[in-house]
Image 1 (cartoon, rainbow, N blue to C red):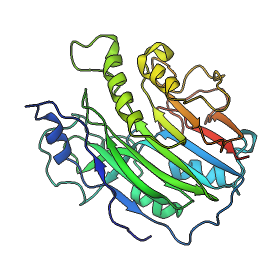
Image 2: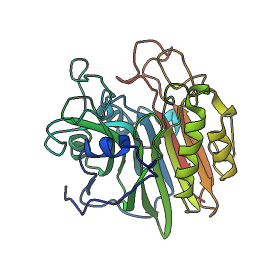
Image 3: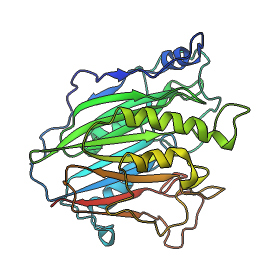
Image 4: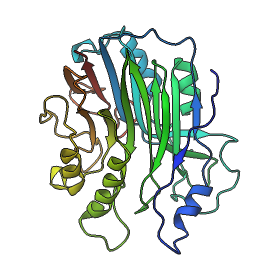
Length: 318
């Protein structure tokens, strides 16, 4: 893989006198932009989009992509010959790119004392995929950070990282464009706060509404595919969801209600993860979205190692 210049970070608004955001920024490494070679041929008739919160690298992404390429997810419309885009949340990056010592602005957890992790840069190299990774926060005192990532078998262009307004933890969405023939498609991977600071009502719904409005203001493209852990504890009653609907995003094309009752596999089991499509440019003929299960009966402590189910979308072009 080759490494083009690191893509820009669009800073979020900072409250006057609040040092938290600056502290969290200084505690992570730089964004990562790596291109695989050779590029995939252009002119696809459909696109596969895998969106997944990999639980700080615990999710076995290499295994899931291997099964997808082997045709195991054919019933979900996953033709292995189609181009693949992966929108990840809580991807992990470790090593010397991260500051050696923590300045204290980070979650308190220690992550390396539990299950094995997949490093997002190493995984992209191993899978032969283009990568754009934007760290959001450091992983406690460990020399690693986590954030959102886009991996793709199609070349990625015009990438940027969009820092969201600080509510509970620092959050940075990552966006990039792929070209489907002559038509550009904007990809976005995002992760909203699970709750607000102490004293916030409705488990941070007001903060998520602020973060969502800020993200939507940065997405001017006609055709956008958003893969996100929205953390909508109140579901579609939240103002963040209403903002998405007002901006033209739908759950697939046309809008629909998912058949599954949860995407977060731990308790309480909630629908937190979404693949949403905005198609103002009449680029999308149909979108079919499926939840992937490691166990057909949805049993087990994790799903391919993560506490979230992966969502797989097949997006057909006209």
